Length: 461
Image 1: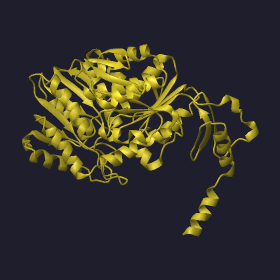
Image 2: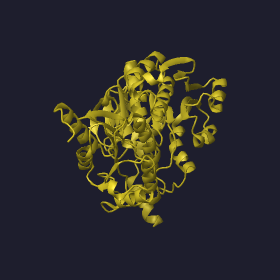
Image 3: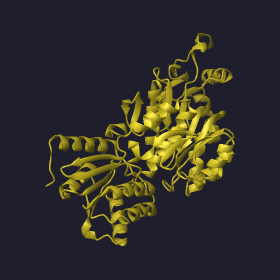
Image 4: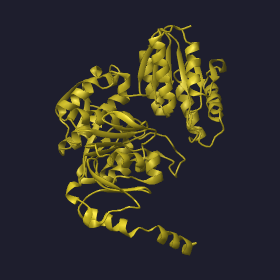
């Protein structure tokens, strides 16, 4: 076996590529390579070649190659929203901005390639785009564990939070292990870069001192000792104080007036606002630009697709969110509960098949704690991941009944979009319909359905 592997390694070695990488390293230039392409530099200051047509050392115009401002963003919840927020701030600053996320590849807010690009392929694609002047890169746990980081060096890395999710995969079984995975992004930050962390997250604070770069913290607490300590050392902080978001000593505005906060009720979105402010400030974006973005972002459903979108359809209030794990669902339903008036509550509920049974039951427990009047169980297209169709729904139903939800309130419609239609058919005027939508195709179809019903003035019943 050793002899065979040695022959394979020799056959796949690429001395010319290794020489180019070494030359770029000497000039402190980033390189990106995969099975198809090799590139030096980033964005508008990069050049890319086919992996089987590498340039000679003498032909490279080294003086035209350099880095661009980059940020890596990860966490259990809030990655995509924070990425979109920071990208919007960069655009407002006047930079042509590329960002990748679970929805696709984007240039200046326009999607040019749809799909889940939250892994290394997405990062490389953005940083090879010759129009990009700043790269904001969502960095998911799965990509880190399967393929590592594409980015060797970043100006900023941020971890929004750590919560129980994806346990049992790739040897990760607890919060500490998950925090280690997420903090991989910190290894790409050089000493003059900035690591942005949630100062209210105990797992992140336990491990923060491992990284010698500059730190920036955000917090929802007015008396967070980690924030106080960092302030004394001159680090950047963003904090919720008296209903205002303060970036160091700059007042970014009243949180309740920021659309993404849902009148101040969306705690986890307020965390995302604070995280984005820290990241943007660390990239050198003006405080006035950060403030103006926070004042408007989220006012339209199109600002943050699939996250806390709202419609009034035929007299029923509809809210859609990603809410893909117990903590995310709890946050979503807490907002729903605050906004719900006298009507009933309907809930769409599903989970990816690669979660452990206990995690699926925990999701049901969270759902049951809000006592929905009607629950439709679904599968998630493309996320069954090794289970039989309907298997997750059966686990959820059993757990819901154990938690005291009558079986008469629960039905199953495995197709995500048809499940939404089932809820619309059940609804009455004044009801609140909570729709966690997880597949990108399902979300796009539901958004189109809601727009059509709204345009046609469709009425409940």
